[in-house]
Length: 402
Image 1 (tube, rainbow, N blue to C red):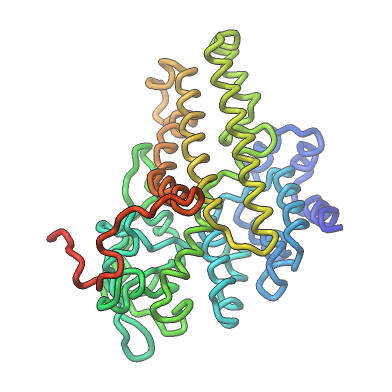
Image 2 (spheres, rainbow, N blue to C red):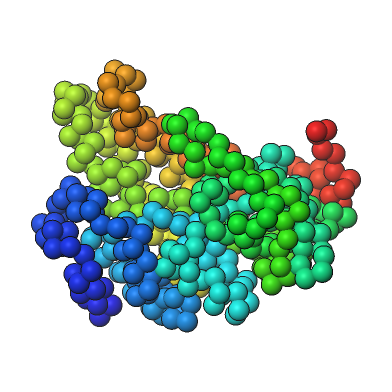
């Protein structure tokens, strides 16, 4: 049984105090034990053993399990409190795209290093003039001997400052309509001409970046899919991005947006608000939303397990997750009162940081407005939003002067 094998592997790899905390279901003790472990080393070993990507083929770094067994593995990893936050873009976005469109050589080259967390990835899609209208991007890839020469600018590239490779969408034929003249590449983030500049966020962190590409050479073997087929390849990445940002792990069991339901209730008691009808209604509403979101994620996972690609369902759960987390964090701030706007230490308290970071949830991975458009058109069957540039050669589309 795969789960028994995983449990035995973890028992042999994790320190005794971690295992004992799991047996007691002591979440706080698991966190303390985890703080003393080299997480990167643990995740590397997890990948080497194939447990990080159990449903991948063995030759690419997985264990060849079916999706049902893989879900049991994920649940067991969650029970042990094994952190999975590193390399989300590599695991949840780059890997599905490579599996769908990569050559055998590309899969064998890139996928094992994603599974072992040895290579981290970022996404190079959005541009200053092409955010919601992604297909209007202007970054150019011009064919040269042995590959392509890329020039342009990307923005809002999460973790690009730490990435080894990037998922790059660039224009290879500006004479075609905007959706047709795009190609998809794997970009070496350490290549000459790649300039990554972090952007400071509201909470003081700098996980988003702008990336300048100046005469960056991309070898021909790093083209993913066919020339001009970039939009179709990108849709696979975008659909998996929405699923990855839908909070499947953060609303499992009695979790509410990354918080245990009990933690929210404890905070209400500490603040003397646990008998307040309005507060109780808000907590109940957030818990109901969490269960609805979990049901939506389970439905999307079932559809994928039947061999279908992640589709418009991802837009539904991504929208729900973003709005839900903002409401949860706002409730926490409401319960904190003055402590949520003034504190004695230099470091921003975690609840405040969570509230500030949550504001990005409705922007990253596609804005909530775009998600509503996708739901309206592809789920509800409403008419497509007018777009005068559709079908027009990209060179003939009016653009703002620089």
